[in-house]
Image (cartoon, rainbow, N blue to C red; front, side, top):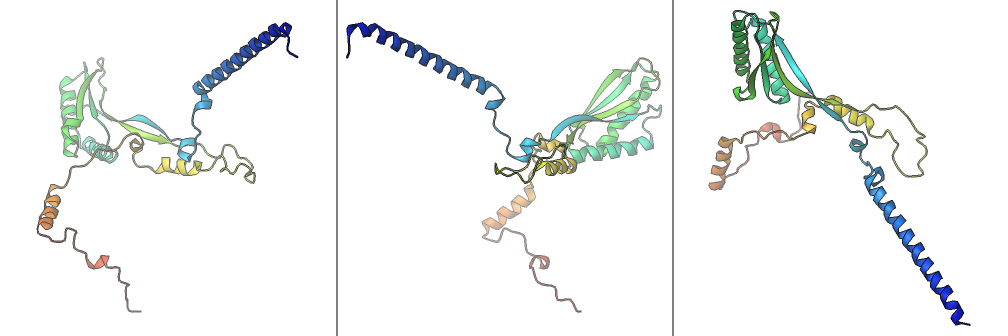
Length: 240
């Protein structure tokens, strides 16, 4: 039976329950906040490239040329041609020509530097992609002309460091090393690791071919190229 003497006890009990509920709510909110700010809030790595990322680093590609009084030598011109071919293949960035200043023979350094620039342009490097700077040779007679650009190197993951029980499939997940070898092979075979960091620049459109296609379209003719005999898919009937 309810009595007036029980009313204070009920009020104290309700007050205690409210305090307990408030403390539980605060603890839950603090736990959510700490989880969101820690590693537990990050999405789980799912694909092999997420679990085994390829590390792409920038490394300088350099060519050192000895300074000659007569300018660039034949061997240096050949080396610059190979250097430019590697640069074109990797779609490198800006090429820097570092000319020694305060050396023994400033005129020889100038002629070698200008000869290197002309050799690079002749090999297909745009003059706008070549920058000439000077560095302090401090009177060193052997200070070279340095030709350099930044290239990218891909480093794949180290696979097979640890193995687990492959027969344990209670979680219906792939094993830990799954996809590591594929990613490592990709890092070793990719021609230009810079493609993993940024897209390549678009090449200019073929205005001549575009005009030919538009002319055929306006005349109601076939716009595709003519099919030759090698594209008909016929089975060869060679004489036995």
